[in-house]
Length: 627
Image (cartoon, rainbow, N blue to C red; front, side):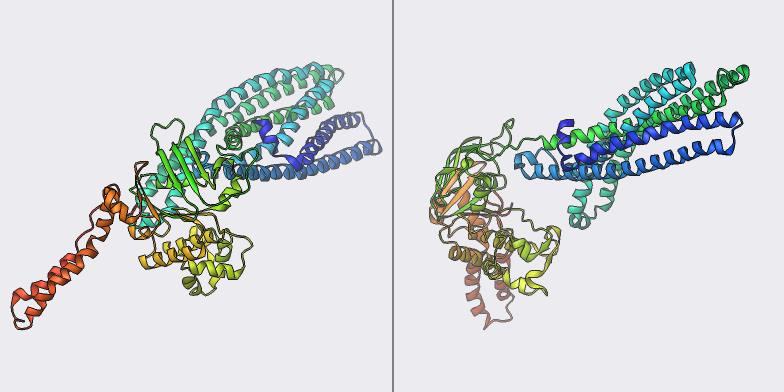
């Protein structure tokens, strides 16, 4: 763990090395000052003049200034080293997360990753700062203080040698008891942050269902849980202070009592006032060093769990890596699923996809339909290698996707995911995720094809309109169209639309499909949809059911051979089919109403039409109309 963390020091290594060296100089000055002070006291006791005392005074002032300079220098280098280390550590954490596959990300919750990059890094930073400064200064001060106390007071300094091991043992017991508590509390921190994230993300639903009180109570319970564990840990750590105070006062009672008796009884021949002053000062120095050591251990104890959590992320091996000799050429957009089986985890018993054998020609438009949980998204995730197959292989352009360079593959297989995400920044900046070098005219072109240009032109700042984080200041349909335009800029060999027109009306949906066909005629297009109208004009339609292929063919073929597709189509179109029939049956009644307008029976014909329009759509066999 330590070796992994040390890799993040990098360019701040010099500052980290300089800090202990400067601190050593500070310790030397602090230890020397009581020694010189003792000499000055003995000189004054011997009846020295002002002239005799001036050299001592000048030396003490110089040593104090030197100690101050060393302290300032150590503070500067320590802050540079610790803050730089924290910056590099956050960078390494973020970089590690960027290499994660979806399977890796599934191991950590978003709130846990945020906690590790913020709270945990801060804890490790504070511990590192104490290690390179305080943890060096205190042991040096402790050892030097005991040596100087022995030089000045001889056997009387043994009292410090006796008390140090006792305090050390007590400190060890405290640390050992507290560490498991901190391990538990950081897991609860993750749960607390997850509660906040979930509440803020779903704020509209919380307010719509008037669940604010429930969410407050839930957050309160999580906060109380964290508070209780922290309080328990702090109570144990608080034992350090009374333990240290007891040691300090016990030592000083012994030193002052026995030292005073020696001075009086020997008339200063065995033990004098200067020695007594130095011993008292060194005693304070030793015990304060011990107290600071206890604080360092408490901080390190808290940071140890944080460090383990950080290293866990950094050392996580991505499940998807670039091959040793990656392929950087793609012949075409053909796709071949050769008896593919896929599970989200090696330990999982359920297979998301089972023995999928599918071959798509380059330039084909393939519709994909199926009920909720039929593994439509799982299927297309394998094409851009967001996950790797469990068995079989997926080939694009005749090459196994595992042999391609990851960046090259994903630049040529553009995906508009089911959950569309826009990032904070202008519309231009969001669109240029597809092509950083795209010109303004190219942006306008793809937005027109995605039916986004019209609403963009309605914004006061047009393409310079600022998008809030998550795209909260645009509607769901506008967000989908911007994401489609962003994908079009890649001019990919394969374009996957994962239910990405669900929030737009059927007319706009048709215009988008028409634009795609014109703009990317040679691109293989895979359209996942819940509406049959979105895929019925595709070259072929794939119907999935519980991870198996339930049907494959044109719209006309599936209407004859696939019950799931036919039931879905009929349930979605039954209302529109019944309306003309109702209108036709109403026409004779309307004609008969002319000579008999007052006949109550004539007034029932329009009601038939109205009733037909209210006929609810029947849920499709194998899946609902919307996931």
